[in-house]
Image (cartoon, rainbow, N blue to C red; front, side):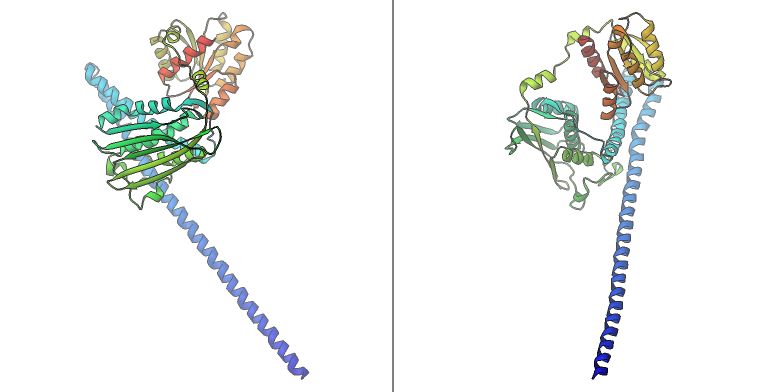
Length: 430
C-alpha cells in the first residue's frame, strides 16, 4: 500500500513538473509572439512615419521651389524691364505675393516644431470679437472678389469683449477660412457663422463658429488623417494648389491648447464643414477700449523729424530700415553692432537720439547685452525707447527682449506700418 502511495505521489510530481515545463514553454512563446508583434508594429509605424515625412519633404521641396522660382524669375524680368513702369509694377506685385507665400511656409514649419516641443503658450489680451471677425473678413476680401465667391459672415454674440490670445485665435480662423477659399472653385459659396451658446462657467462665454464651403471636399478615407502632420490628400501638382499639410494640425493643436474642440464633416465634390467651439473669460468694454487704443494720424505725423539709431550688422537690412524711416520723414543713423550702438549713444548729447531699433544677433555685443548696458547708463540716455527689430520672433524672444530692458518687439520681415505705429506710440509716451 505504501509503495502505491509513494508511486502515486511520484507520478503526480512528474506530472506537475511536466505541466510546469509546458506552461513555461507556452508563456515564453506567448511573450516572444507579443514582443515580435510589438516590434513589427513599431517597425510599421516607423515606416509609415518615414513615408509621411518623405512625402512631406517632396511636397515642401516642390512648394518652396515654386515661389522661389517666381521670385528669381520675376526679379530677372524686373531688371530687364525697369523702364516699363506698368510691367515693373506687375513684376513687383508678383514678387511680393510669392515672398509672402514662402514666408507662410516657413512660419508653418516653425510653428509646428514649437508646438511639438511644448514651447507655445497663450497670452491674455482683451479684444472685441466684432472687431476680430471684421479684421478676418478684411483679410480675405480681395481673394473672395478675385475668385467670385459667394461669401456670407454672420455673428450672434452677446458678450463681445473677451480675454484671449488674439494672434492665435486669428491664426485658427485664418487657416480654416483660407482653406475654404483655397479649395472652393470660382463661383462657389462660403458661409462663416459665429454664435454664442450658453456657458456653464460663470464669467465665461462660449463661441461656436461654423465655416462651411462648397469646395472640392475630402474623401471618407482621408478624414481620419486630416489633423496628421504633413498630411495632404492631394499634392499641389494634382490640384494646382500649394500647401504644407501643417495648417490644420496647427489649428487643432491651438484649439486644444485653448481647451476647445474642432469637428470636421466633408464629402468629395460637395464641400466641407468645420465647427470650432472655444470658451473665453468675459471682459468689459472699458477694458477693451483701454487696451486697444489706436495710434492716431497726428501721433504718426509727430514722429517726422525724430532721430532713430539703428543697431544692425546686416548691410542690406540696415539699408532697408534707413530707407523706410527716411521715406517717412525720420532721421536715421546706423551702428554696426551693439557695442558701437552703446558708444554712439554715449558720445552724442543727451536727447540727440529719440529711439533705438535694436537687432539681436550681432557680433561683439548682441542686442540683449546692449539694451542692458544702455539701461545702466546715467541720466536720460538710460530711458531712451528701445525696440527690438529682429528675426528672433517667437514669444520667448519677445519676453527676453522685454526682460533685457527693451520697450517693444517687432519681427522680421518688418511690417512697415506696424513699425511706424510702434515708433509713434513709443515716442508719444516718452
